[in-house]
Image (cartoon, rainbow, N blue to C red):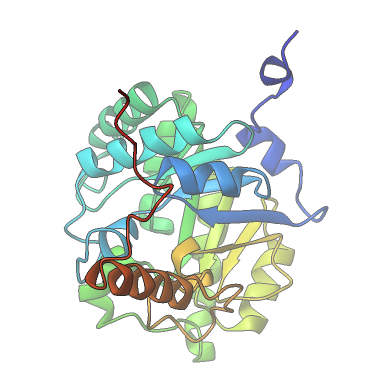
Length: 272
């Protein structure tokens, strides 16, 4: 039996079983090469609609289409072997009705072959989450700062810094869990609230700008590698690839302009 045949992808059930156990490592991924690298280290690869900003230069995630998500998710599936691949449902593809959500989520699952989808929203999306789960589509929830609602929130603002907001955010997380989500992302919320929610819900919490007490963490891959320039203040840089790439390009440009590239050994000689 080949080594490739022996590798089993993690499933949504595997992730749920990690509640209050070994922390869940998650990164975003948008391309096959990066997915192949991240797959060695991650439990979940999230094909986030953040690709609209990171890869396509959009101002927000609102303009991301279902076709964009499917294209990038297919690449991530081809590049990975072990991690659970979760695909964001983009703005406008699921909010109208549970039926709309199912049709589009089923298309993603069928065309990508991923293991789950992710929806933003708490109590208002609980009926849709239940509808999808009952029909065989694993769902990751997402509460707190929900980027697709940036125009309603007035920007990318941390949530729960005012204690008066805590009950609503806690109720959102509880509703997502009760509806059958296998995990929930807590984005940009006050640390004590994240601790409280993690203790209260029966499913794993995946923090991004939340608390180390969450059951796992997720970061945008390009942010943590230093490829995107300005990043949220909660992001820790684990690499300076942007500076390294800039230097490599500058060195290449200098050699081309000096006519030093390609040099001997970088060209094919004519055979007599």
